[in-house]
Image (cartoon, rainbow, N blue to C red; front, side, top):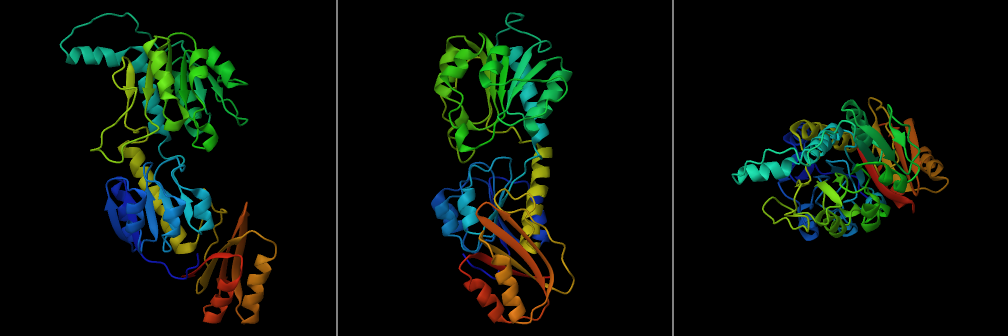
Length: 406
């Protein structure tokens, strides 16, 4: 996909925080907002003439969507996960993807702590009985979390912060991660998932959305957990076998569960939520709100919209999840060429040869590569011909070429 010009239109879906709209509007964008997720056909239609797209977790940006959106420059996932975007296809079409890997960490951690305490005290059942007019003042089955063993599967930003707070409540923390992670505080690293499951009384999942995690926690894992354990999943819906979880809850083997993410989620607030976990005692079901606090959503809105604006205005790809990460300070009085290309030897030499043959002086330049793709920013003098751009377009490795005026 080749383009020289960008349109100042942005589309924000799924109730992204108003601060994102304000930031994009201030940068000169005409912003359209839609409060729900869009299906593939709807999204293709809505993206006509749009250069920046903002989504959350329920809108899927597929190869078909990307192929039908030649004006699209970048996608902002206003959340942690990016598995709803075909990252490989986005890179192939020269579309940068950004997310918010840190902004809602605290919100997710606080929800996990609240749910652990609620399940340990069996508050969902007490609450339901009170609303039904039943006064059940009993300590049976209610426990403190102090002294309990917490197992954290996935020791990233959320897992490590949860580890610190859980320890401050008097819990003993165990963790397992496929990567070599440094233990925080007194947390104990487990060499395998099996070791962790056999060591703790509460298990909480904080894994990422890679395809290899699909269905990784099911019948065998639940069976390995000690009797009357608690289980939480605030990561990705597709990592857990919900039918197996229901069986273990109904048998009493799992004493309580808190689930915030589901394999299939409604696109809008007016659609019915369907799950085999509905109606179970001491099971907390929340509508994917781990990061849905005013504080987190405001931070995410500001952070991701800022990344989109910076990318469109300067070509900066810092913290992009699918592009080589690069940022070059602008040189006053220059034009900027942003060239996305296939990562093969000699591309930079070819670009500079074209510029030199047309007497174009390079004022600043930076190249980065990432797997199959390369990305080079070149600041040049303000005088250059259309022939320069045509020749750069014509390079058989070119994916996308943009010009940006200082």
